[in-house]
Image 1 (cartoon, helix red, strand yellow):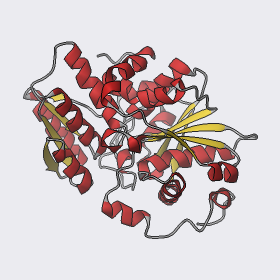
Image 2 (cartoon, rainbow, N blue to C red):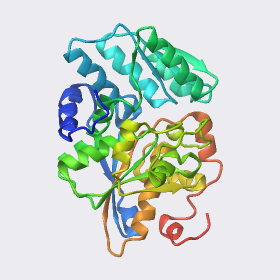
Image 3 (cartoon, rainbow, N blue to C red):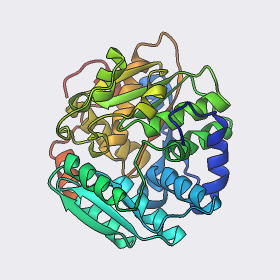
Length: 337
């Protein structure tokens, strides 16, 4: 692996490699939502994926690639705020390699238990930064670091979700995905370059976790000292990597989303498409809605919904206030929540 840009074809190769191990997730639409907003929103729903999130695509592609080369490691180590933890544990089990996963104390208990359920050894640290340091120590002792996004195989695997949607013939006017460390967006960008070049890809990020947006604007990577305080736990990364930033710089733009807006769309997407939607997924929808609102004519938008794993305490926060009384058509008309 190198830091040089990948050829988009690696996403197709990744999909062929991991296809026997994953679910080809569905595309959902809501006729009512499209009527209200005057645009067509198409959702790639990764909540139906193995481990309930897109992350397994990248983890499997990395370990299966090593297996193809005859270079499977003796052990795997990874750090995560939740979904990558489960993905790394699941992928390691598929290839028969033991995994140790470092989780910060604020990671979802449900995701922690699920990670252990896939057979991984789970170590809890005080913070995300501590988890990253401990991971490095284990890597230096010989474990293979299965990084959540700073890995070419991982980001190629993450791109297979958008690849499936576009390979099915969908031709959107824009594509939106949430940014954490940038692997999801980088892979989505590569898949788009392969199958629908010219289609703009946008990132969306919680305003309270906007390191990628700041980096995009400044041209230099901005790093947080501590994990951002956002309900979108998949976006609590400290920074993007040089590997992903080279793709993020090529995006059409970024949207910053306030916490109440994230909660609003988490509630409404769950209600409209009748399946659990993580707040991290709702960030992408909020960005897509903001973009569509500025368009002079009806558009088709592909919204990448990253997963559907929600901890009980997060669920309580989401539904502490009923926001379904303000329908999306009234919401985008700036009626107060």
